[in-house]
Length: 383
Image (cartoon, rainbow, N blue to C red; front, side, top):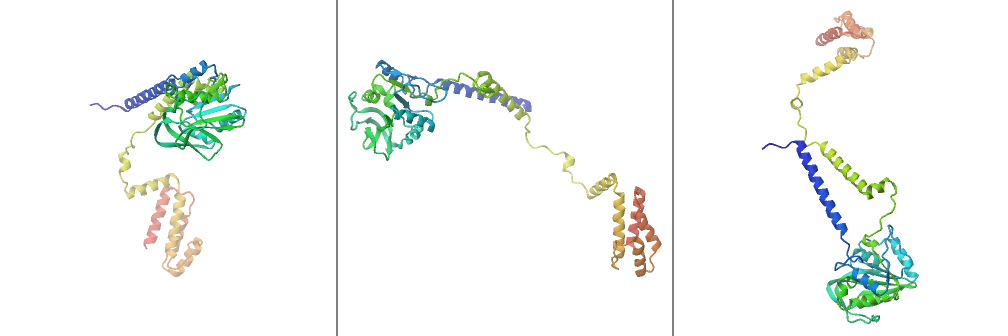
């Protein structure tokens, strides 16, 4: 079987990456078309479309307005925040606090993490039951507008814990409050550890419509109601694009450019990557002999024209070795050195030695003169 070339493998890898990215984008796009749970636009069992239409039929004014940045629509009397999909920032909670203190009614319901963090702003902690409870008996004071037909129905998995004492428990599991309310300024806040009674499926259960309508009645009839869809990720598109950065991120053409640049970068990255360790050449593996190193060093000295330094080194070696026995200083001038050495060695040929030292001190010698002088030093050291 013929092995695939490196370019073929690279093409296959890029193709697979493109298929994966395309599939991921298709899944994300399909998911983005599905409405989040507990939105007033969703007709799914966990949506709140039926509650929205019911309030409209009861002459409530539904103001489902969303903005690019979180802010409250004008003239709102009742706000529902049901199982938020994103966290409520501190500045959002402060905005809601100011609105409640001016007379608004806020309903926060949910049993997930974002609801837990939002409830902590009001000093309430969300805790979980050991098992799911299907009935929520009423507590004093009773819901009377309209009168409850029985306990609320639906799966309840959480309840509230708090050190506060200024709240009213409307529904509970034993001694564990599930639906509570408390005054804040001129307004009121309802906290529900279950969003199910407000859902399309929940409103079909006994007791849930009465419970939902009692909470709505706390804000008065004929008032403006707003479902917070901003924290479900449903936000108005910005009418203007500020700068090339937003154009790249928000426009289809800009997103296509980012996609193409990413694919090209990946192709360049993979094309420039080495596969495996480089195989060394044979001459890099073979060990050299000592003579090769000596020859190489000699050739480098020859190319660098170090003949004068080499002869000075030979001259120093000669004077050092000849005068070592008599402790003569090799740095003495040549005449003084030869004269003192002759006193210790009468048989010394002082003229020949002085002539050799003078040749070793020559400036800019040629290669032949250097070799001849080096041989002379070797003969003197052998004597």
